[in-house]
Amino acid sequence: MLIKICGIMSSEMALVAERAGADLIGFVFAPSSRQLAPERAAEIAGVLSPATKKVGVFVNESREEIERIAAIVGLDYVQLHGDESMEFAESLSLPVIKAFTIGEVSDEELANYPADYFLLDSPGTTYRGGSGIPFDWGQVSSRKFDREKFILAGGLTADNVTEAIEVARPAGVDVSSGVETAGEKDADKIEDFVARVRG
Image (tube, rainbow, N blue to C red; front, side, top):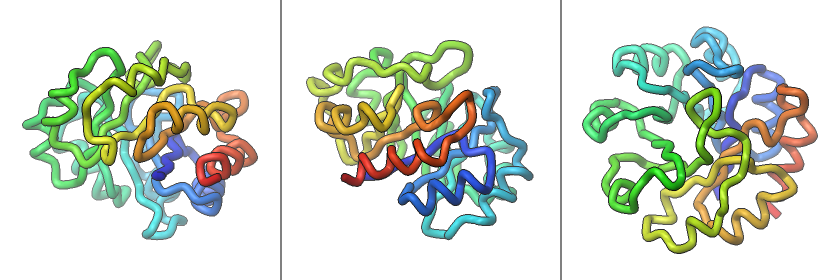
């Protein structure tokens, strides 16, 4: 089970996530309360082991800017959270994680979009991306798509992630606000979340 901790903003929390057993660390380069400058993300990425994969989150960004930031930070994956076309995804030099909003994407699109993984999330509120509110995981059970490429997101916490995995059967889980206290990453919550998934 892949575990992605997204919205990391400090070296300290990046190391907490890595030591807890997270596989992927997400840096947000789109408008968000967790948006980072590429140079800051590069500093944080520099403390991590090469085994911990670095993901950059972008929303309707130009290919040139994505490639520029990826080179500065040393990204392993590009996560597209906007209206990026299949052709756009194919033009990128790095593996792609494509985020979709549950209820707004067809099984055909999930089958054909050129991505290494796709992420199903709750509808956003202020920003593109999740609202931090879980969706009905039962919506996923009747869908026909490649579970090996499916990452579940949207309002996951240590308290609900076990049930979410049982119902939705994803290949991975993605969490951001669910491991925060007062808008800041919380070491205890990160460790608890990873332990529940691994358990």
